[in-house]
Length: 205
Image (cartoon, rainbow, N blue to C red; front, side, top):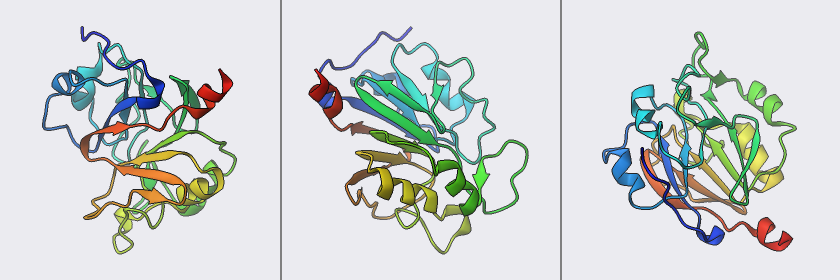
């Protein structure tokens, strides 16, 4: 079993984010560098995620368009698709899947722009938004239907102003790291990310 690791200072919460492909460094070695939470952003196989099974840390995630929805089963990873979860003084939410660039088969998570907008229309504020797809016009590829972003995520960010949005799915040569007031972080493989300070928790104490 991997022992708990991390920091006690909420202002410097450190995440290990994973997306789209197995990290080239084994997950136990990444965790040994000291993290407080693991965030999974989709298109990761069950085999990719197996090393997280006994990790005693908060583990949150969303599914990608190539996932079948069973990848988190038995691994202690909490699915936050269209849900709000508080961890370490921060609220996390999520949105799974991508733009529907071809007819979805089985349980594949792909949405038309209209479907995604309907799903996210009433979703409230979170501090950190996890998504597989990027917002439309941010780290996406307008010329590639498979990798165009979601207008719904852009509308959400512009409406609710989360402190940070993390996503995978695309291949931006020069990733954009801000949309308005929101920090944006693109992930492929693995990335260590310092999450925004838990200001609400600090102000409430």
